[in-house]
Amino acid sequence: MQPERIGSYITTLNPGYDASLPMFEPWPLFYAIKAANATPVEPFSISGVDTVATNVENFHPAKNDVLFLSPKTSSLYQRLNNLGLQMKDVNETVPHPLILLDGQMLPEGKDTLAMLKKYSSSGAQIFVIDVSENELTQLNKILPASLQLTQRTASSFIKLKNEPVVSGLNNVDLYFNELLKNSVMVNGLSGNFVNKGNTILTACNTNWSEWNNQPEYNKTGRVLKSEREKKQAGSALVSYTSGNTNYYVCSIDMNLLKGNADKLLYKMLSNLGATFSKLQEDMAMLSSDGYLKSALVCGGFDASNLTTEQAANKEFLSDELNINPFAGLNSNGQTWRVEKATGENGSFNFRKMNLDGNFKNAVAYLSFWVYSPRSLVNLLVEPDMPAFDMYLNANGAAKIILNGKVLLPLTSQHSNDYEVKNIPLQKGWNHFLIKSIQHGGDWNLGVKFESNNDEFMRKVKAVLIN
Image (tube, rainbow, N blue to C red):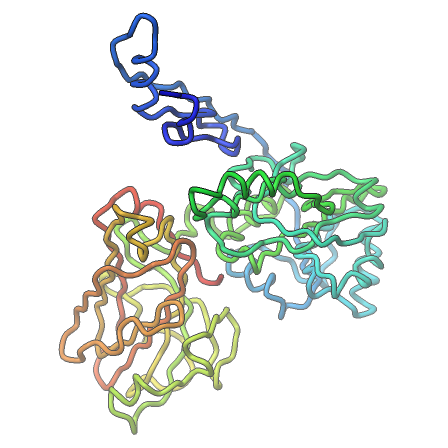
């Protein structure tokens, strides 16, 4: 026997992302082999490994007023608005504000640029989020030093400096390889802005997607190859001080990061003094017992001349299967808006919503995203996968679309309670679109999720946009 050759199968390794975990955690087979090969042979026993306590940073930033100077049509504004970020009107005079810019939609108006120049001279914090190659020329007119972009992709990041903007964030919070299939950064940062500034976050040198879900016979080689490959500069978050103004530029694409962007934005902006209308723990869209508490809603669309089956099959939205709505989006004359489940038993009461259109013989849509920490599709990868079920309490009928595919063509209109067993969630984020069809009477829809695995259910979460 050569014990040194079976290490990969008897231990789990921690690459250093989570300081609360030990660097390696032996499995029982490790101790068995160790005892069997000792001289003299030792009794077999399993002993625990002490964990390392995570350092908790006590950081209390001064409150700052926030100005959003990019157009309000930007996806970043929609996300921040949904998060409850408190923003001042751009026409208000604010001393030393925190100024946010969408790097994919920078301001171009003379008045806005003049305002930006005034604040940068008097002192402010300017944070550019989601840097875009298309807007680089315009961005360099704003920054105090030239910025260049490199062709560098990444889905996990390393914290290099403990600057206030990343206080409370550790490498484990910046590891997204297992949540998303694609890179969340497509350009690294370089140029004088980086050379003379401070790199706070950088792309991890290891591409962990070369390990995750790869064949056992070549995953180690793929990881080693990714580490040895020559790469372009991968700075992801850089700070630069000019006079009384601190600039921050982030190249992590919040659109690609999807629902995971909320926590990151909430933490970084809070660290810079931004105020949110609700605490982060209150943003949960799923109650402790699995009820959906809020969603994007659009309706009501006229279905007075249609049967229930015809209404279910008719696309009242353009490209119904693939739509990814956000608050304020207009779909065929109706506006998507955030609504809460204020009805009995945690249901959405469409009649009490300030919706456009019809409230009788009508159709309305609910949109939301659900995160699953593991795949509920591939039994070979997840042999002990938990069950995850969905329960609807509705007046009328409903159609459920999951990840662009019809999960349930049409519920019965003769029963208020519907059960959908074993929802096939993918690992990561999953989009639900529920079409509620009403043909008289009350109009309510309650959504609840349950699982036979409590630990799994605690990790499930929901967001409005992704």
